Every structure is written in structure tokens, then in C-alpha cells.
Length: 549
Image 1 (cartoon, one colour):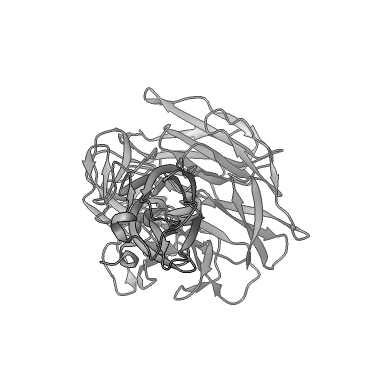
Image 2: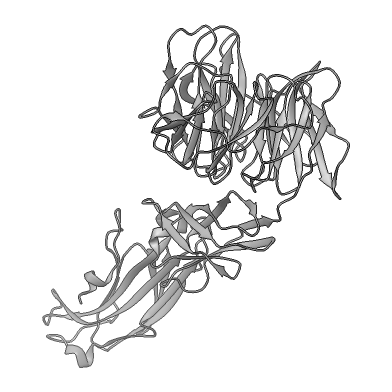
């Protein structure tokens, strides 16, 4: 195999670079001395570098020594390959110390890279040394390993005793072969990697409660791939049916969020005068007294890592501590249109938040993206009319519906992709109702729009629910829909795993009444284990075990 074939080139590979050392001898003999008189010997044939990630600092430079025979009058040092940024040499008598400086990890990204440093001695090709002849040559091969990045797992908290899939995000997953995943010491049962090598789906078997570091292994990666990402597995909680009181003067609920890591329920309420976030902590078999923080809030979402809440008021995003509810520094949304305000916020698996907006009159306004790392809010380039998004639990995408009561014709619905922060309406239905929020399951394989129309993940209409459905959620696996039916006065359960060929679904069993009347303007969510429903309305929040049907 030739030297060129041995060197690993990628798009944008470095051109061959050379360094020449002249005048190693005071004089020159006639006609060249041949290899016996001009050998080049090196202290090593291989050098290896490694970096823990593309964001790591470049490894320290390494050196080797070249010695050369008595007839060498010029020494050539040539390097090639993405692994090497530069070479330099220092001569001392008939030896040279050659330094190899590796490329910075950020300049080439994760993967296995090779390079070569060729050292060649030149002799005089004639008695006057007007021409040079290449003598012996020696080559040092350079191998450089830059480990992939493991940046997140979504959802980061899941339920014990049940198998499911998570999305692991990072970079460089396709740079190494035979990639496997372990959760702690337990191997994933299935792994698929996207084309870009930036995310993979890994199915874990049933796990006991605990914290499991997400490990990636590759056949051609020396040592374990570094990871500080962990999947938190919690036991399901058998919440008893009960009610939770709103703060005084509450007229409605805008959002319910269940924090599975801490067994806490959060709500954003229409409460005069300042719309607080209200937190209910469950401990020792009972719900504690609520705590709250107020700032005119309109919506709130838990970050993809669970370390923060992202709350919005009419004009700003406010980071909030998920336990103490201490408020961070507000970040104003730029370029808000007159008579418009921030409306809803959801968080993707990359921890960037999609924010929709609304007008006091009918019309479309641009939404925003919030980046908590940079502390910035920027326009996302898409204008929608009073849009309502609901994010899938795996964070890969959100269903977005739009519309207002003045519309007389249907408008597009959209799927928001967290991967590209882009909206797509291709293949999605057109609707005009925006009072019942969309429902999606964990993996986006089932969607309910208008509270009545059940679709698969490709937006084929499977069947319908009654027009009297005023709130609906899906079990995480997508096999059951739990609908609050205003006519029946409670929860009805539907098997939506089957395709009804666009016909009506029939409820399984009898209606399940709630512990109390939640009021009007319902918001409903389900715990990640699928065991408990939280139904919030103008009067109170009702905690309801999901019917076992």
C-alpha cells in the first residue's frame, strides 16, 4: 500500500506541507554516496494523539529524532493528513528533533484521523552539488482519535420496570464502527443512528430505579467514549384520586407540567393580578402546601435536562428554579409586533425552546427560539396565527395547530422538528379549531387533533372521538386515549392502537367520574408511566388514576 493510500483524507483534507533543512555538511563529495553513506533513521515509526471531544484542547505536541548518514547534505521533512497541523525541526549535528503539532479537535471534528511525516535525506547528484538526489527515506505514521460527543438523553427521566426508547444526542456517532450503547452495565437491545451521526435511538430493557450513565462503545475506539449523561429511572407512583386547590382568585389554568424526577406538579394559572407558577410537591404519600412565584406568567416548560423551568410572560422568557421557584434574569423578546404577546413555550431535545405568539386581533405573528446557554431569544422566521404547540416526550418534535374564532376556513397545522428547528405542513391536515390542545404520545406515532381526530405518525386518519371531548391525552405508548367527555361527565378510554378506517372509536368500559368538578377551560396531562391523569380547570386540579382498561 502506498503512503497516499495509508493517509486518511476527508473533505477539506490538508495539502501536503514540507520543511527543508539545508547545508548539513560544510562540503560535498562527488556523485552521491548511496544509501550506505546516506541512511536516515528515526526513533519511532508511529505516534498517537487523542482528545476526549471536538471541544477539547489540542493534545500536546510530540517529537521524534531523525539521524542521517555522512553524505546527506539536505534533509526534507514533509507531513500530510488531517491529523497534523504542522511540523518543525531543530538540527544538531547529524540529527534533527522533529516536532509534530496535532490539529485542534474543533477544526476536524470527531473521528479517527491519520497523517504521515516523511523524512528524506538528499545527497549531491554531481561533483558540484548543483543537483540533489533523494537518498533513503523514513516515515512516521500519526494516528489521532477524537472521541464523539455524548451531549444528552431524552427523555432524561423514565419509568422502572418497562422497556422503551430514548434519543441520545451528540456528534460523531458515525465516525466509529459497531457502535453500542449501555445504560450503566445494561446493554441496549436496539440502536439506530441517524445519517448525520448526531443522534441515535436506543431501546433499553426494563430497568430498576436508579441513575444509569449512558455509555457508548465502538470496536475501533481505544478506551471508553467519555460520557457524563445519565438516564434517571424512577418507580411509578400510585397517586390516589384527590384535588389540589388553586390560589384564590384563579379563573383558569394555562399549563400543567409534571416533574417526574421530583414528583412535583406545576401549573400556570390565570390568577389576578400576576399569574403565578404554582408548585405542588408530593412526598410521603401526600401533596404538600403549594408554593408559587409570580411574574405575569402565561406558560412554562421544563428544560430537557430538568435543571430549569423556562417561563414566559407577555414579552420575556424567565428561567426559574424548578424546586425553589427562584426567578432568574428575564430575557426580552425582540421585535414584538404591536398588540402581540408571547403565548406558549415547549422545549425540544436540544434544550432550545420554541415560543409561539398571539395577537389581540386575528392575524399571524412570528415565533421565537430561546437558547438558554447563550441567554438569547431570536425570531424563528415562521409566522403563525395564535399557535398552540405540544412537544412529544422524546423531544424530537412538536405538533403545532393555529387559528382563532374569527376564521371561516381551515388553516394549516404544522410539525416542528427539533433537529432543524423547522416547520413542515406537508401531509398534515388543515383545521381551524384551537381550543382543545393537540395530544401526542412519547414517540409521535399517534396524534389527536381538535380533540376528536386520531392520526398515526404519518397523519393518516385512523378514527374519531366524540365531539363532546373537551380534553384528551395519550398513554406514552400511544395505545390508549384518555378523553374528558363533557356529556359523560368523566374520563372515557379508547383503544387507538387499531385503525378504525376513519370511523368512530367505541369507549372501553364505563365512564370514570372525577373526584370533583375541575371547572371549564380544561388542561390535562399524563405521567410518564401512564398511571395518573392531572386535570386542571377554572375551579381546581383533579388528580385521577388512569382507568386500567
